[in-house]
Image (tube, rainbow, N blue to C red; front, side, top):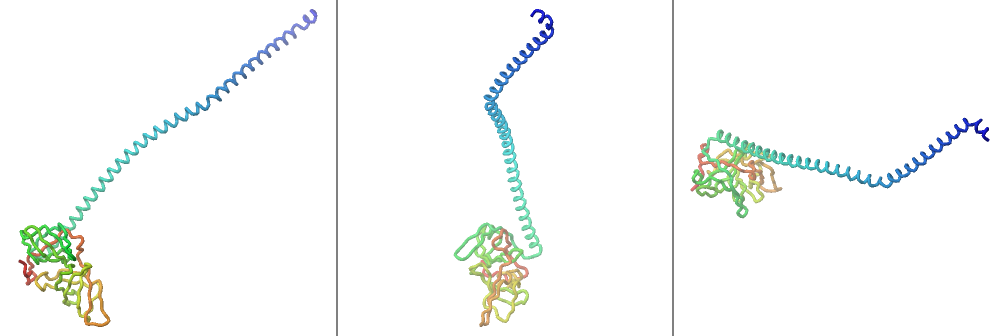
Length: 282
């Protein structure tokens, strides 16, 4: 035995060393395996909490950033709405200025082309009396206005003065059922009597059947009866009614003046082209 150990001592030594090294390696692997298992357990247990924490953090960050963004957007939206409202108001004011300027321009042209003595007045109110619709003007006797004076616009006849106070006057419209005055068919030069109606139109009744009128024919004041000066537009023919039998026809006209949009009118104080001044003006 001593001879065997002595003879193979080198090989035995190498084998022993190899065995020791193998044991050391196995022990380290086992220890690492145990550590990996523990680490895996820790990771498994802590993963839901880490995920929840990360989700809460991410959600809070996104919510905060979203809130800040919404605050900015809301502030910007309010600013834009304020600017838009201001611009709309400015546009409305400018449009009103343009509209008023256009009305004043037409009145100025009318004042230059018509040499009658007249006073301009504003419509400040409306009065409904039974079937009559009356306009109230802001000028009266102090401005020289008297009863039965003609009221006109650049587009045509509005009506006549029904009553007067020192600083206001009331206008009876041409479409009033109680309104009646002589007119002239401009194209044919035929004379007729026109009156208002309950539906706001103008009608010519008892017009000779033999007289031919076309839709769109213009009817003007004749200047007779001493109320309305001659030559002002009254209306255009919109309908001609002829019965199967009879000597007359009925003519319906639309007023050339939009009586629902009046804001300024002119009252004729003295007509230089009309020898018949308003009768019973006092």
